[in-house]
Length: 314
Ligand code: TXA
Ligand code: MG
Image 1 (cartoon, protein in one colour):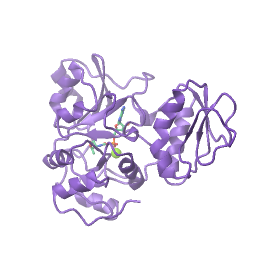
Image 2 (cartoon, rainbow, N blue to C red):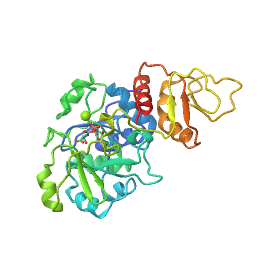
Image 3 (cartoon, rainbow, N blue to C red):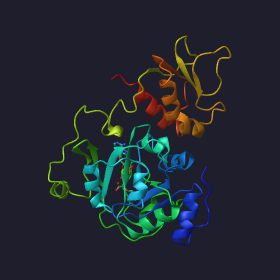
C-alpha cells in the first residue's frame, strides 16, 4: 500500500516523490492527471489501485520534450509533423521502441505506446525534474468525472493523493488521441484538439476509428492483448503440451513451460508479471497456455478482465 508522505511543498519535492515511486496528481491543460513514473511497474500499479480501475487499459506517457518522447516511440515523418501541436492536447499512438523505459502495464502489453507533451508549464517542469515520462490517467476514481481543479482531485480521493495545484485546466476535456499508421492517421478519441485543426496542418483527412482494423482502441474490444496461443482459464492443473501460467503452487511433477505470476500468491506481484509472462509463454510456441485461477479481489479484477479478453475468441 501507498504510504502517505508529508505533502510536498514545491515542484522539486513532487518530483522527488515521483522518482521514489510515489503517486501525485498534476495539472495539464486538459484535466488533472494521476501520475507515476512510467518505467516503474509498482508505481503504475498504484495508479490502478488508487483509481479502483477494474481493467488494465493502456496509459498515456507524458513527456517533457521531444527528446524524451523519442526514447519511447519511433516517429514517422507524418508523426513528426503532428508533433508540432506539442506541447498541447494531442496524444499520439506510435510504435514502441525496443527497450523503451516503459512498464508493460503502461502499454498493456501492446507494441504501441501513447505519448504526449502536455501544454502546462507546471507539468513540463515536473516531468523535466523527474527526468522520466509520467504515466497518467485522469485523476479521478474510476467511473467518476475527470477533475479540472485541484480541489476536485482532493475531494475525489478523500485527500489521500498529493496534488500539485496549477489552477483550473484550460481545456477541461481530455486530449485528442490519434494513431498514425504509415501515411494514415486515425482518431481514436475526440478531444481538446479539433479534427479540423489537425487536418489543416497535415493537409489530409483524419480517418475514423476503423472497424476490425486491428487493435486500435484496446479498452473497447473484447479481445485485447491477444497471444498467439489459446488460453485455458481457471486451470487448476496444466495438461501435457500446454504451457502453465501459475498463481501460487505448481504441481510437483510439471516439466512443461512454466511461469508463476506469484509463487507467494501476491496479487500485486501477479499484476506486475502478467503481460510479460504471457509474452514469454507465448514465445515458447505452445498452442495452449493454461492459466491458474486468480482471485478476483483488488487488482485481481483487472487481472481477470485482461485474461478474459486475452482468451476471447477472435
Ligand atoms: O488529456 C488526457 O489525455 C488526460 C491527461 C491526464 O493527459 N489523460 C487521459 O488518460 O485521458 P486516460 O487514461 O483516461 O486515457 C488514455 C486513453 C485510453 O482510452 C487508452 O485506451 C488509450 O489512451 N491508449 C493508450 N495507449 C494506447 C495504445 N497503445 N493504443 C491505443 N490506445 C491507447
Ligand atoms: Mg479518464
